[in-house]
Length: 394
Image (cartoon, rainbow, N blue to C red; front, side, top):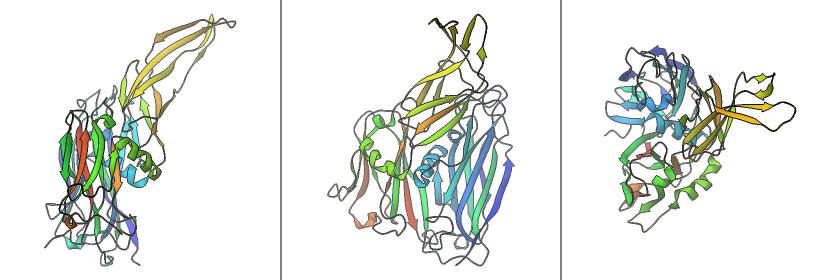
C-alpha cells in the first residue's frame, strides 16, 4: 500500500490584486488524493453586510495540460457540492464584523476518499497541472470600508499526496466540473445533453436568484435516456430532495451579524427550516422599568432572512406593559438550520464500487431535463466524470 502525506502548496499567500485569475503550478510527480483550498479575506473597518466570501469566487479549477478541466466550479456551487458529498458543510467563517476575516474551505477530492489506492490524480501523466482561482472581491459590494478590504485575499492550499516515485496504479480519477450554465426561463423545459465520453458517477443541479425559492425556479427534473424511453429519475424536485436528505443531516450555519432592523441576509439554505439568535452582552436594566433591552427576531422565506432588531422594556410590579422600538445591534450570532440549498445531487451508480454507472455513449441520447417556473435565476449542471489516469488524452 502506498502511503499519503500532507504537504503545503500555498501558505496564506496574500494577493496584491482584488480581481484576477490566480494560477499556481502543482508538483510534476506524485499521486494526488485531494487538495484542501482555504481562502480568506478581511472585512472593512465599518462592516461588510450580507457579503459572503463564496460569492466572490467565480471559478475554482484544476487544469491539466492547459485545457483539461479536472475540477471546475464556482465558489457558490462548490460550497453546496461538498456539503452534498461529505454530508456536512466544509470549514468556514461567515462574519460581518468589522476587520474580521471571512474564511471558506473547499476540500477537492480525486478519489472516493482520502488515501484511495485505486482512484486519484497521477500528476506525472500530465505535462503541467495548475490550480486556478478566478475571483473578484467587489462582487456583491465595493471594496473598502463597507466591503472587503483591498489586497486582503489570502490563498492557502494543502495536498494529500504520495512521495515522488510511489504513485499507486490508479484506475482513473473523479473529475467534477461545471458542464453547462444558463439563465432560467419563466416556463417550459430546459434540456441539457450529458457529456458522453466517460462514465458519470453523478450530477448536481444548481439554481440561485436571491429572494426567490429555487424550488419555484426548478420545479421538476428527469434523467431522460433514449428520448424518454427510460427515465431513471423523474418528478418534482421538492419530493426527490425528501429522499436524498438521508445523505446529509440537517446542519446549522453560523453567521456573525452586524444586525439592523429590517436588514436582509441571504444564505445557502433553501428552504430554511429554522433560525436562532445569540446576542452577546445583552443587558438587563433596573430602575423605573425592568427589562431586556435588546433582542432580535426574524422572518424567513426561500433563502432570505429578514431581521427584526428591537428594544423592549417591561413595567415593574408585574404590570403587563411593553414598549417596543426598532433597534440596531452591534453584534449578534445567527444560526440557520437546514440542508444544502439551491441544489440537488443525484448519484448515478454505486459511489464506492462504481458499479452501474451511467455511460451516456451507450444510449442514443442522455439528457437532464428541467421544468422551469421562474425567469432570471443563474443555473448550472455539474457532472462527475470518471476519467482514465491520463485524463483521456490520446
